[in-house]
Length: 537
Image 1 (cartoon, rainbow, N blue to C red):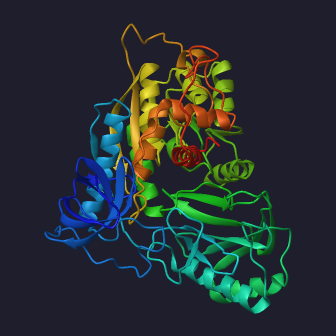
Image 2: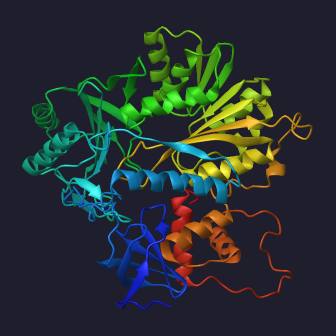
Image 3: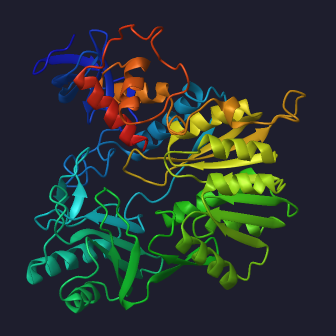
């Protein structure tokens, strides 16, 4: 078993979902920072756990031909990027393999990932979010912490975002504005949010713990000096004691509160809360792939859940007879309707509501779309959405995902409802990071067992919390991030502690007086972090 502060020689076999190299020392998994697959290294153990360890490569005997010198001075301190120590070829293959492994291991699918589509790796992000520390630092969080690393120039953000960050620093410094302290919940400035369109225009929003800022005209002046092409400066109100970035309401300090952009030949109006893909060029590739997978001929009815500002809805509307979009954010639905009006698209309808409720309502009203398109957040689909989707019996489901693990979980759930994954393609929307987008096509099976299948909630046998992550996914997450092996019993105990109701008799003792082993504190902390990661608490 590897010991802390000792050095061992090992070969890197692969990568974790966060881009760490994986080696085996004395039969135990060791996660190695900045190590590349195939490298023979001396690994210094930094943290040793019972079932795994973390380390760093202090000597590389046979460097990978894919190893490169990181091009960012903040790499290793800022938690934004994961792959700046390897070339693009290795990065893309690591991401493609991650999607393939998830679909096979978690999803139980034999579909082959066709490849990974990629584009320009620098300055691609059209949306930037900068946390602000209590002492006025504007930058990005250090990995797995809320410690802000001040960053003057980011390799993946637009230059306009860097300029806006500097303008905010100047405002905080010269006007003596107090910044938000997460511990005391006092102070004003919390986050900087910048959207930049393909023409170089920007919309700037400052999120504050209150309803106003001192000398707001000075803030506007500094932003306009730094960004001559800015279209508006907005104040967002966020007084919630959580890690949420966006606010509950917005007030325009200058200019307009929306930004216009062109995507796939269509015009879109974007407010601050509207969902919009962060990589403009690769979003066009992503949507083209989704339309291709949908197999539209011009006669279909399409239902688009999680439609955001109606981007993919309207792209598909050009190839379909009728498209219906649903989204929970009211501002996004307002943008979607305005976007359709501007683009002269009349065969679309938009509804505001929770995806599960909207899907159930559509199903109850007898909607039978030919194609269902879903682009959910990282946590994936709830079992309610899966059930409602299956009850509408679409011939094809186009699933756009930003998390291979939750995609694979949902592929497995859809398999229970009579659908099989038949195509999958990875899209590199986030170069330099471990994140990867996937487009997956699920087709309705045409066997006697599945033609008239009806999926009910009790048949899925999942609680609301379990819809976000299974026990096995929680175990895998904990092992990958801490090296700890936790039992289903320990997970159940921690879930019960946080009020997550288990199914009847699940992990209950055989008798009222039966004794059960209690979860150790270290494992309880790891399980708690996993539950937070999967947004279960």
